[in-house]
Amino acid sequence: MQDIISRALKAAEIKPEDLTRVVITGLGLAPLSALVLEPLGIPVDRTTWSLQRQLGHVGSCDQLLGLDHVIREQSLRPGDSILVFGTGLGFRFTCAVLEITEQATATPA
Image 1: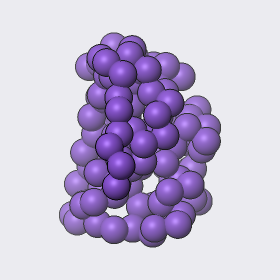
Image 2: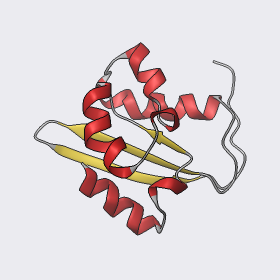
Image 3: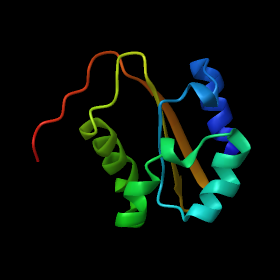
Image 4: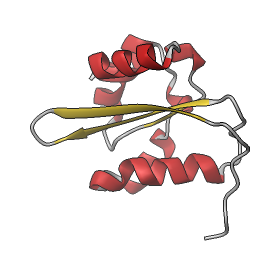
């Protein structure tokens, strides 16, 4: 998982400390910390762990719900970077780095 994240960060030309938010897949805190956060130096408070611990793993919706969560917080600003990663069956890992280019606005649910 670290490899795919490192490759995505390199392609986006940013470092882990430059990430504003990290949208995570539904992992428990221990594996999330051991596999991703500690090796890359990302604090848990920059992730969507607080949301995931309430919802649990909801499959392929983890990332969409996480993105919705960070947009609705209305803390994102132009120039912010968001790392989104997921895992799938067969040890498949996906990752994308998103850049906020304009002020995000959320519509009421």
